[in-house]
Image (cartoon, rainbow, N blue to C red; front, top):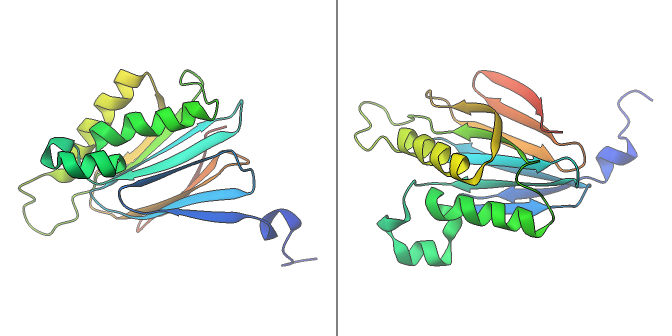
Length: 173
């Protein structure tokens, strides 16, 4: 049956991660997606042994800009969101030594000079936090000037990345 939806694809549920948020899941029917990754960063993490995964989409590198905002929405910032994200994954039985991660975003999307260099600062904050947590990054698609979007299939650990340069797939399984 060419073009017919399979039972597997017909039963997939989508969770959208907005800016400053995160979603973690053990639900094999779930696909977690985020859009509009400019200078923001998304980290996709997956533990294939227990089929646990998630996506965080943070906006800024340092919560000292707004401690009040960070206390209510830690995923807005790299320094508070990344540890919280991996804590939530661990609560679902993901083990940091088995988690594989993919990082995307950190672009310089403003025209002209980006005097704040938010994308570059987000990339540096991400690297620092992931090293401190002992997380293995198997691939990164960071920097440049293109916006990105991505999705993680919890059942398979497959990540689909879209940008103006095209679409790519990556397995975190």
